[in-house]
Image (cartoon, rainbow, N blue to C red; front, top):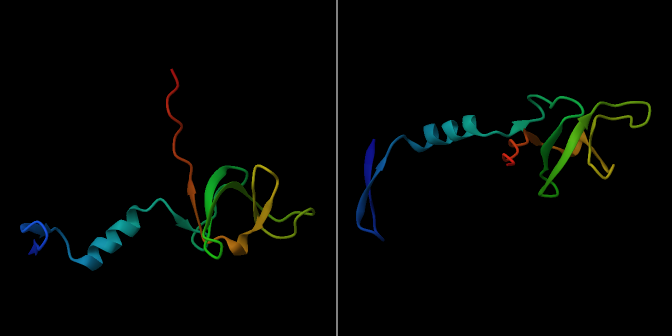
Length: 99
């Protein structure tokens, strides 16, 4: 643990863990899952990310079939994105309580 001085505030700041450990810890807490590690359950809505388009979309994972010959994500408007375009996905957060 080291102590650094913030030149703007002139206040000491405590570094709780070295930067590499901090980055590794943050990565382990991330809700995002690489498609290379694990795929979502089919037909369950998730958020998925396509880095080439810098795009975050809502859709469900679908396996290849007679109709679409590659694994893909299906959007609510029936638009299809091939799995090869997707890098990560995450579960949807819980809905807020409605009273």
